[in-house]
Length: 172
Length: 267
Image (cartoon, rainbow over all chains, first blue to last red; front, top):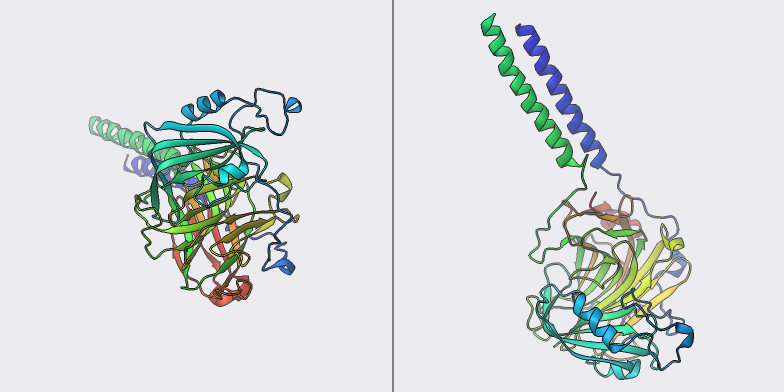
């Protein structure tokens, strides 16, 4: 009987150890190796002032007007579409955005939006039509490790033709 | 005989208990359900990074192997930060950090530390937090499929064309250049960080086996940000424990320009 018990225990021990070892093997990964094409002849790189690709952003507001019918000064959606989107999507990057209100929403060319950003720029051509939205609340953003900054105003800037969200952030 | 039966019954219950324990270990370690994690940082973010300090930083560049990010139910960034870490009350007086920075890299997902990007898309981005100027994140658009697996040069440098400005850029392997300028930015950078930032608690993944940073280059000449050298010190590493694993596979103090820092998460 004693031998049977010992045998049983041994079997269980083997099963337990094999399950654990299999899982440990599965979760262990090889340390990645770099690709072989670091373009060292361009390094360090001196970025030219031109030949920059303009930012595309991420899909956000769905256009309601066909793009082929749009002129440069017309948007592919309405300000009501913008407000609807912003009120149903938590403001970009804000950790504590509760009970925020939309205080401004309008279509403006990029050059005018630049004047609302405390010296920052949208990064797109001056004539590009944008949708500028400003919110009031408490908006916190994280940065390098352990760093959080908070602002009383949040801003979201959409491309007026594609509806993509290009820039988001907070203002003092 | 009766005693033997009782002993056998007692052992049977132990065996069942051990089998249950084994099954629980199997599912906890990752055999059955996606792994979940939590981040110990007060902001709820996980970091794996290396940090260098120099009171005169004017430029920094690094080469990152471009991999597909999946943000799971949070966000993931593989990036570099160019930072004024000495407390400056003009850098977000309502926050906890009072720190200014310019950051550039790869991002996926949406949370408190990056742009609002679809979870399963990897985008180039840059962002800044400027003295008295606010914080802005610029979504430069998706990485093209052909760029995955190849290296991208990321950098931030003082812009010599205009005062108080910094240029953040990403140069993809095919020559595609994405860049932005942090204007009206009076910060004085004294710290550089490279590495990974993760939020959420499930489903995040960077490539199949993480990524690497190599050829870290810096300038500390405030008048000429092109005048620089390869970083040959190991800096201060932070993290390296789950869910973000990171560390020097080849410390620059020993390998020089071939120094290599890896980050991986979270499967």
